[in-house]
Length: 345
Image (cartoon, rainbow, N blue to C red; front, side, top):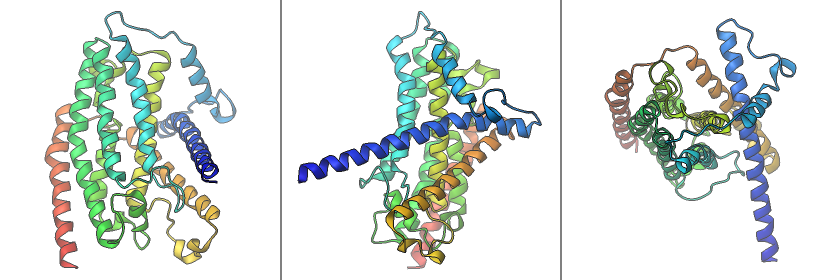
């Protein structure tokens, strides 16, 4: 009986994991189409519309093109490390999604160190970019890798300060729960989303998330006008495509995390009004996943919108914003919140 139960749980876990990977890989593929369509709309163009109805098969055509293109390998590159870099990027992008609670009864990662796991995965992303830049033996790629290291380290501190403010409010509102768990963070927002209680932390987190995902105006690691293509200059075919898959999966992950930490995750604004907690678990799962998906897609649209609206910073401006604006603002916000919560006890 115990063996059958364990097998049943394992099968359910792997089926859920496989389904989620298919969903998120599909979202990453169609995020590229959304990027091209939204940029065309912003710039008063048509956008891709030749492959399938409204261009909906364009991502499939792009994948087939990349699969069948020649994979170029520079003679002076470190072959094994150059292959490992895009694999590492895609793996880390998928790993960060594991902690996102999809509904009150559905989540992949249920350990006791959820946010610490997230910070660990996010901090390892710099290895993929730096490794890609160094292993190809190109000075332009190396510059992109060095920039990525400095950028990620700089903005991780601000992102961590914003996350600490979220944990602080969670511990105050739900003292009997583990504030490190994203599920606890979402449940603490049943009576008010943290974007209303912690607006400065929200602003710091969103800006740092843009920098962590290397999205414009923080895409200095692949600035075409300055370093040709940055860390992926010497990549081609499916290896080149893997970096783009990782970039768009990171964008989707960042959108899901913003929704989870500041916009209630799987909670809707009127859960208590319609009594969602009294529904059957399966319908609670459908309801929660739907709301999380809507919020994630909205923030993915914001990422794309910002890219085609704001110009790229100079590198000195990027570093100045990280160290002289965001980090002091995040630390000050944390100190003020601590004082206010201490006074209200």
